[in-house]
Image 1 (cartoon, helix red, strand yellow):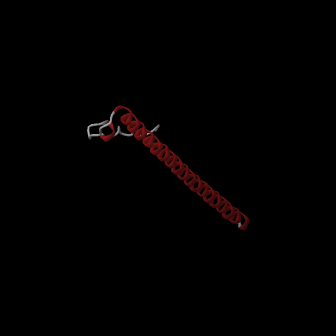
Image 2 (image 1 turned 135 degrees about the vertical axis):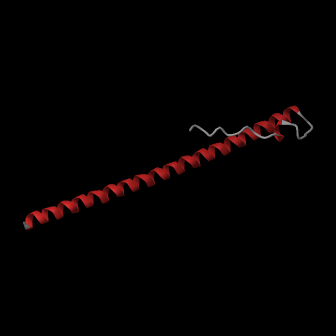
Image 3 (image 1 turned 180 degrees about the vertical axis):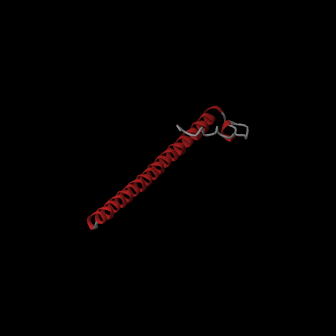
Length: 88
């Protein structure tokens, strides 16, 4: 009887250790996923900022080529098109 009790205790310990290991792996994977999303968001923000700078530069260069007088009705003074949300 003592051996079967010890076997049950060992089985419970093994199941508990397996559950702890599984929870640890799931937590680690969740952290890795959050870090990856953060990197992707930073990269997207960087490219969005660079494209906005390029867009503004192109609008101002075009204005400088075609106009000598500035007023608030020109393309550089209007609101840029909205961001479509990227590739998601």
